[in-house]
Image (tube, rainbow, N blue to C red):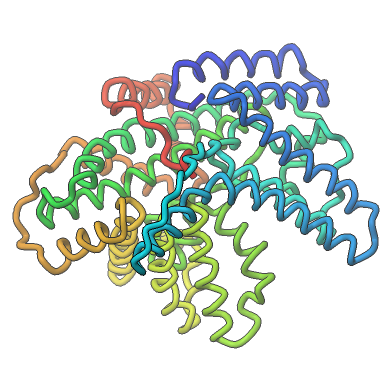
Length: 477
């Protein structure tokens, strides 16, 4: 079941009404209903993989309970190791089995051997990269004594299986969510309205922006040799906005839906294309994953506490692991490596913490800041080519065509309507960039007809200008 489907449009109001009007004030019953709703939501895709979700959650629940009473360092490390092996083992098996088999065969063929293999093409369970990391983060925090292990199995299962973030994040922390599951939640009309507005904005980004970009992007990247460099650059620009509209749109909908049920998620995207440096971009893009790798991988490796050489090593490990997390293809690893190399100049010059506030938040924007923002977006767009291309060879060919073999001919397609939609997106996000989502405070003090007219305009644009329905990109991860 996906957010932009008819099934979900029926599912959500039913769950919402039962949750608030039949189970109001009964926190444990509400949490149990959250589990049931999450299982229905996830099982709509394939009910068999519910057992993986349940297995992951129960393993970490019992490990957390044990970590709450075991004092021996050796035993605590053993418990954490079991959690890591179960979560990463499941993730690795389902996500990378075919990748390693195919790479193994290709390597032997390179040396002249012709091994044969009946590669089992495993189905990747939707959301496995997200819920395993969320559950594993709980075990690590319990091991570090950063939280009191959860004793109520219903509360913990609700935390892992809450349907808004189940398929594509945000990867929430137990330290943030478990306290919200434990306390009584009271219906708040204003909170529900706020959540619906964020859902509406996320749906606009997904349906009007991302889905319309997708058709042109697919056409170019599925047959890149048929297009000149200018057209390929146009396609790269469209993909930059496709993946942003798709993934940040999902995150907006997830955060908005969570707010409908009285929960507050972390902000997962903070206007990343308004960044002035690559380091600022990575503080604003997929924040829940970036901070997860920072806290559970980068800091344990030593972070930036050692020499500059070790800091560079740790940074590159994080970017390579981030690329590998995205999927079983060398293109993702190349994408991670490119972004790591982008990141290094700021790290070495110790300017990577220069821009901590949103651009223009304190006043006038200088020309150099505009230039930095455009250059950062250009670098990011070129890196996205490796993320989207089917192989590194194709990505290299596209980059070469754009940068070195481009005769600057007119593009073979120029979807002006799509770019008009992107311009509207950027304008609205620029005006609302100081808020968690841009339209949060639009027309709040205006007369009711004006305010509702604005929301109706977004709804009409979704209905009339929405592209052909596309699965969310990050479902494959």
